[in-house]
Length: 86
Image 1 (cartoon, one colour):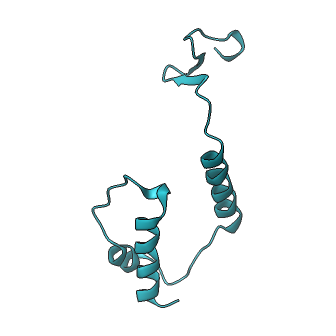
Image 2: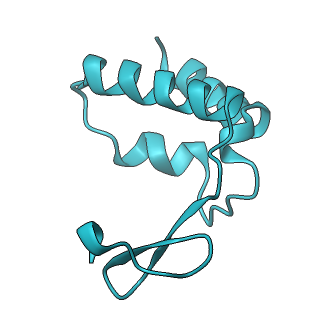
Image 3: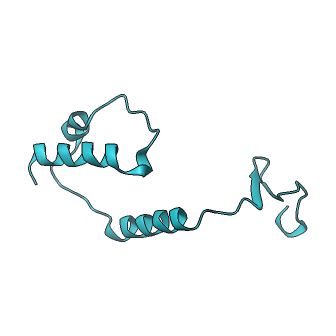
């Protein structure tokens, strides 16, 4: 894939994929292309797994019955701490 094709593909991905909605970038696809090396490294299993997880999360939104408080404890939606998780 040529550099201009890669940059166009990246611009299309950023503008059309809902995953990137609301992300502000102070750089463009040209900057990304300029900083990339010449060897394309593709972590295929990680990418496929991440895409599958993203699709599943979009199809089945996570129920917010559990939340995480930043004091390293899991709490229920009512705010009480579960004994096993504290």
